[in-house]
Length: 125
Length: 355
Image 1: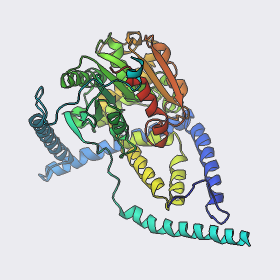
Image 2: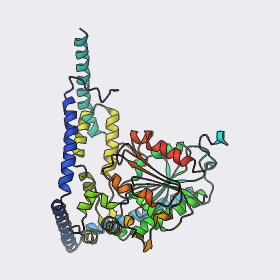
Image 3: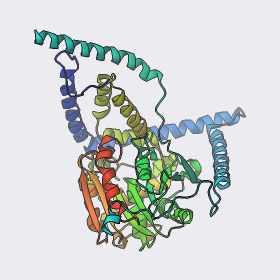
Image 4: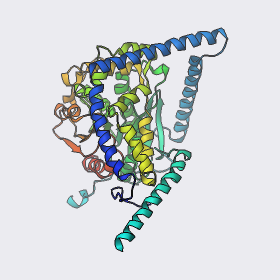
């Protein structure tokens, strides 16, 4: 489909909407940003964020205690396990990379010459 | 008679578009996300959130000085390597540069103590050392984007750095007081960064995503309407999916790093006030004496012109240049706008300085 985005036909039901959406976006961005920059709004946002963080932390702590009582692994245990796996994966990646290209070793494909000059440099030289 | 024929033709086009919107709308949800960041590369370093990639050269003769792209810490580096034809990495490789990238993964709980010094000295500085060993060259060029640019100038400002041949940064903020919305939201009177970091160990990605998203509160909804409108257009949909995926794919920030950048850069505005330190060492951008380029975007809603403009006057280089290009924070570096504007500028500026 090769069509020009700017060629809104007279029968295009979206043609009117395009202009309207653009104007609406500008309006919302301008007034929204002004509103969000107000100290009382920023303060309220931070209070909500802070409360959410505290609630999540309390929930995680309570859940961890319950799981420990049930002799089951917690999210933190799974995270720790995931970290170990990530560490093992990273170590494997390093070993693989080292096997392919040991530092200072010659690569299978010859390294490119580092002698390139910018276009036009040869003519002016 | 012609008018009738034109109207019928136009109606047919609109009918086909409507049809395509429906057919491709179903396909949109059923098809897999586009594969991004697929240029062949070797991972030289994978340690915690720190990654260093070396891209496979595509030509037989490259410039002497290797190039290191430094990605912003909140986002993934594949914005530099979207898809063939829209990849800065591919562009630089084709023009004969030896390309490396400092990229980031999500920091894990064990990474919560990583500080700004770790990012600047160990990760950026360590990448430069590794690239010098890998390439056998005593000098490198650094290209930093947004916060990657901040990390680059902090490293360069710690002391005179003989290994730094060229430094180019894109949309890099230094005057954080000029980023008004971020200032309002992280006002130290009610933003308790210590509780956040001490409780979670990191700045969560969803919190950062919301903050960036709210800089333009109407943009996401309007973007979705435009997507619906253009569902018939494969190119539009492809570009939308690429950038939507990238912008949603945000990374959390390591706790101490977030705490330190908030207190020093956002609250104290330490770069502009001359009080910036990294690991107790002062940062003086007068130490930057290599050729320097700062590219900013005319319509950048994240790093505004006021926030980035002072940088050019702060660096000590005699050979320095600032360019303000059309575009926004992301379209400056990726997408059709970048292909036309920034990328040729980088090549023109860097090529003659890379021999």
